[in-house]
Length: 248
Ligand code: XBP
Ligand code: MG
Image 1: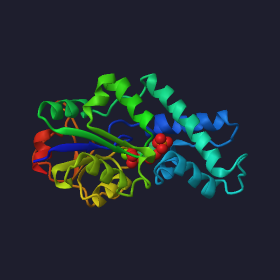
Image 2: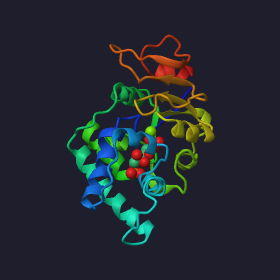
Image 3: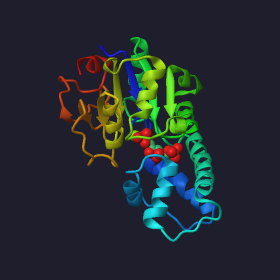
Image 4: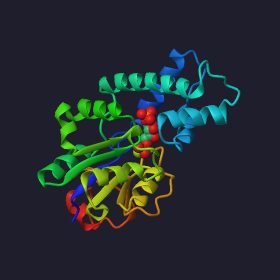
C-alpha cells in the first residue's frame, strides 16, 4: 500500500516551462541588456540541464562561449537567476498557468484517504509556493509534509539527492512511496532513490526514455476525460487515482 505521494513540480503539477520559466528567463535577459532569447524549441534542448542557474551556465558554455560577464561568472549568473525568479513569481501571481488536469482531484483524494503528500523539485522554493498559492490557495502549502526544493541539496536531478532528502527528512521508506514525474531526468532521480515512479508526459518530454517507469500516461486524467496509457499496466483504470496507486 502506498503511504505517500512525492510530486515533481515543473511539468508534473503544471506546465510551467514553456510559458512560465522560459518567459521569465527571457525577461531577465532583456532587463540585463543581453541579446539572448530562448525560443520554445531551443528551450526544449536546454531543459536537458535541470536548474535555472545550471541552465544559464550551460547556455553560456555551449551557445555563447565568447561571452564575458561584467562580474565573476558565478555572481553574474546568481544575479540573473534572482531576477528570473522575480519575473517568474510575477507571472504566476497573474494566475496564467493552471494545474494539469487531474492534479487537484488527486491531491484531494490523497488527503481524504490519509495518504501523505510531499514535493521533490529542482526549482526554487518561492516558485513552488507561488504556484500552489495561486492555483489551490495559500492553505495548500500546508497540505505537503515537506517541500524539498532547489539548492537545499548539493546535486539536482538526475541525481537522487532531492528524493533522498525528502525520504530521510520524513523517515519514509522508498517502497512506501510513489514518485510522480514528467521527465527522464526526474525518473532517473526518483529511480536512483529506489522509488516507484509514474510519468505524465508533456510536449517537452514525450520523446524521453521512460523504461524504468511503473506507468507512463499522457496525464492524470479525470473521470470524464480519460488518460491514455503509453506504457505499463493501468489495471483498466481511465484516470489516475489512489486506488490505482496502490495497485502499482
Ligand atoms: C525543473 C527545472 C527547473 C526549472 C527552473 O526540473 O529544471 O530548473 O526549469 O527552475 P524538475 P529554477 O521538474 O525535474 O524538478 O530557475 O528555479 O532553477
Ligand atoms: Mg519536471
